[in-house]
Image 1 (cartoon, rainbow, N blue to C red):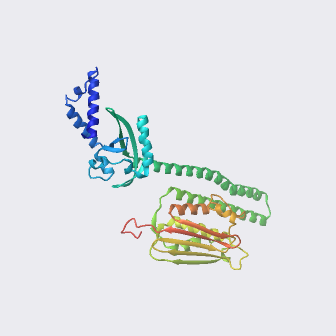
Image 2: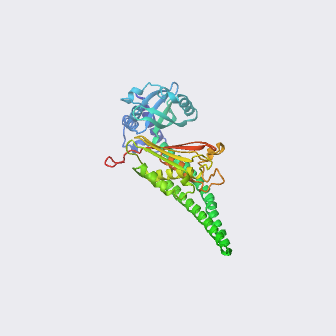
Image 3: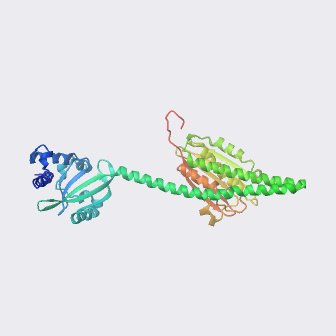
Length: 399
């Protein structure tokens, strides 16, 4: 007789005996069903249970009975083929932990643990095992219940990831608010001071000088605000994929940077090689180009025989490679690990907001690309950005 039947029948006899000892007789609730009928009912419940259920001999960990869900988990045609199998042998990767868990259940009455199992039908699944001790006459057996908790584990991983991202965002926000308040106040205080001087200055040439300095402070403030907007957009908005014309984008970027001093002294070299259509977020790519190119232009080396900034874009079906090289001041080796930090400035004479390269790194991460830097102080720098070509969301569209 199958052990599931024995187990069910044993429970039935125990409950019936309790009824004869003064408690409500089970037969009153079951319509006076016979022990054989009750045994059959328990057997059906055992087999049709959605969770894996096993009856295990703790002496050698062999399976004495199994239900249909167990057959599905282990890739068997029927549950009967599992009878006589070593439970530990079905879980070789977790055999040690499972053996200890079964011993614990035998010693203390129950135990449980979770693990990952390579299912024949569904690949890797997260499982939770619960083992409980039961008595059948003079024999002690283990009733093992195994549940698929893959969805729960997935939800936990997503929640953990979201919490990590939230902690990172909160830390960055605290740092951002603190640093930005100082960055915004500096040019404002400068303008207010210059206004005070202007109000008492009668010399026209000095007045013109003060106005020029005020314009520079206001322009710096404008740059900081633009960078803050770029930072906010990248953090809040999803990637918007569209075709990108790098020739047009580079021309637009260079035109927008004509205000930079000394730009006429720098040899700008542009080269774009297209192999098919490239699709990504146009606005974000434009911000990458603007920050990298302006960074190279600002830190040009006035002592160089021929200062240059070379922008090379290579597009293929897999990705776009953007390479910005210059022979400018370069970056001291000690500063290289920190150049992508928010508000980090490598030079005292820097007039930027200090978050340009930080924004570039954040955008590249958002686009699932990569960013590399090679630099030597006094010799120049090379920034290399690789951005994957986005797949076509709609076959009828260009991207």
